[in-house]
Each structure stands twice: as C-alpha cells, then as structure tokens.
Image (cartoon, rainbow, N blue to C red):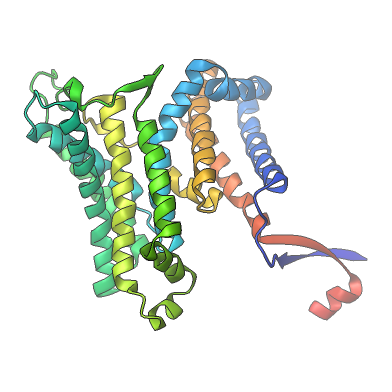
Length: 362
C-alpha cells in the first residue's frame, strides 16, 4: 500500500515550463468553478472562455486596453516588491496610489494654467511621489518607534487615503462647472501624459525608467545590497551594523512613492482629472503580481500584463453575456485565489511513500 507525503523543496521551483503548467492548471480550476456558476444561469462556459480571451487579448483595441491597465499595475507591483524584498509587508499600495493622485492634482492646481509640459509633468510626478511616499513613511515610522505591525497600519492607511481623496473631490477641489458631479476640473493639456502610439501614453516610458532604476539600485548600489541583506536575515544585518531601522522606513517610503507615481499616471493619462472612482484595486492586485513574479522585475512586467488582460476580459464577459455585475468580481477573485494557491507547489512537492515509510513517519 502506498500513499503520498508533502515534502518541502530544497530550492523553490524555478520559473520555467513547470511553473507555466502550474499556472495553467490553476486558471483551469478557477474557470471550472466559475463554469458551474455560469451553468446555473444557463450560460455557455465555452463561450464565456472565448469572450474572456477576446476581451483581454483578442485584437489591437483589447491589447491596448490591457497595456493601459498594466502600466499603473506594474508601478504599484514594483513598489510592493521592493518592500517585500526586505520582508516588510506593504499592504497599503491602494491608499498610496490614491494619495499619488491627490499629490499630482495638487501640483496641477498650484501651477499656473499655462505652465509648460516640461514643468507640469515633473511637478505632478514629484507631488505624487512625495504624497505616496509619505503614506508609506508614516507606517514605517510607527513600526520603528512603537513596534506597530506594518501589515495592519498600511492596510488601515488605505481607507484613510481613499477617503481623504474622496473628501477633496466632493469638497474643496470639486469643479463648480461639473453640474454637481464630484470631480476636479479637467487638467490642462500640458499636464496630460503625451501619447506614444495608438492610445498608449508616455506612462510606458516611465515604467521602463522605473524598472531600470530599481534594477540598478538593487543590484549595483550599497544601499540596495544592504536592503537585500536585511531582508534575508534581519538579525545578522543588525549584527553587521546595517542600519535596519533606516532601511525599514526608507523602503516603505520608496514603495509608497512608486505606488504614488502609478496614481499620477492614472489621473493624468486615463481620467485627465481627479475623480472618486480612481481606485479600482490596482494596489491590491499588485500584491498578487509581486508574489507570482517572485519579486523579479521582468516577471512583474509579464504578470502585470497578464492580470490586466484578465481584468479587461472579465469586463467584456460581463457585458457580452449579461451576467450579474458581481460575477466579474467572483471570477477575478477565483482566478487570483487559485493562482496564488498554485504557488504552494513551487515550495512543496508530493512524493510517493510505501506503507513502511508511512509507519516510520507516523
């Protein structure tokens, strides 16, 4: 008689065809579960699967839409991954994203209306980075001074940041000519990211610059080395006199600044103004992307595009099949949950054992 035993891998499963098989199996399982829900509504699961792929990847317009959504997701994911490298769990990218939109809008409102693009765009990105960085700096300081768990503090700061953004839009920054709708005035042309090709804007260039800068920072600088060393073994880092407290606050501030830049891109290039529906879950999805990519920049780019495509595909599925609005969220949630659960097999494997070995381990 034989059985199975779960064994931890000595080295996590590297990215390759086995990882791809695990990912595809997780997606198939998620879609199988959601297929049952579709059958209950007398909808065709096969048609739904085709619509899902067509909506996210089936043509120029869907691909552009996917790329546009992947840009802020990539920036948030890179920010989250920097903190995760130090084993600092920043769950606050959503609030930092919202504060980035606030910081960028504040820069637009403070500048003269005829400010040139070479002044307006850097001012917006600077304001967004400062606002998002501040929203990461405060939880870092609370952890350093009072030992407050950064998971709880960054999570709670999400709600504060989003409500602060909404307060400004509904209150002091509300455009008098918006006929009662909560939104700021439209940004001047100089404060909008210029197009590159099609509907794709210069936020893509910002992603490339950020990716290159973070790779150089982590791989070529002393501070980046200390950050990685502190993440691998905090106790040894303190023994080696690496400034762990400074790095803790710095990495949360840097993570927040990158999420803030994502908020700047969204208000400038997508909405051309600040409005209440700015936050659509990029900060939370970024945690999944960082986890799936194992904190590698190149992999973050792939998974950002992939999950953005699923998000666009789910919206298309909802429109074409006339399923309830909640179904899109259910499908997206199951996909993310199953993909995350599939990561278990990157760290563990099943081994066959006989009855004698089972008795020895009992």
